[in-house]
Image 1 (tube, helix red, strand yellow):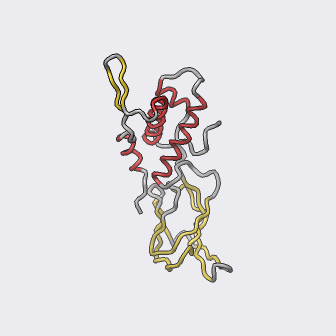
Image 2 (cartoon, rainbow, N blue to C red):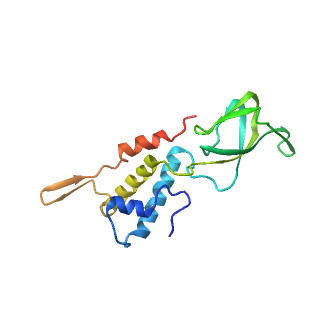
Image 3 (cartoon, rainbow, N blue to C red):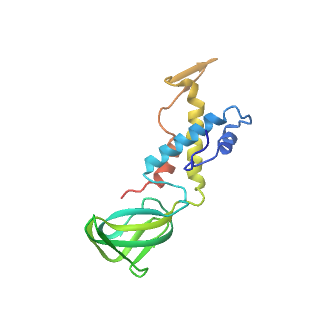
Length: 187
């Protein structure tokens, strides 16, 4: 197994956090990093890593802004509006005078409202983080580490050894949840 292209951290960083120096657990850690990264992306409804090639998305024209699915926006190749039928569309390019964009927030603002229709705006762009933000990577590392530590205790809610006990919290670490919520779009 290898790390997926959307992995939010590396096995080396998780091993450092867990203070593991052997390679015995590398395959398991790759699986966990991939799973946690996918879970975080699904929770946030977005892809985080920079797209290596252009992304083409269709958006509904519904006023004066659109929200690309992968942000921050690194570059816009084109924005076009559709006229004609879905089966035989005619695409007309907007000029850079017709829109502005907030690259960090991932919002494109049109100078004049866009005609309301289904999938009548075609956006071609590159987006995503060139470097994963350190707080987001830390959330992934913490969640991966927790899953690694819990792997032998699946289904157990409390363990005791030598007079001490550990109670496993089934929920995600609250500090990781706070970080993840910062990267979720509510639109």
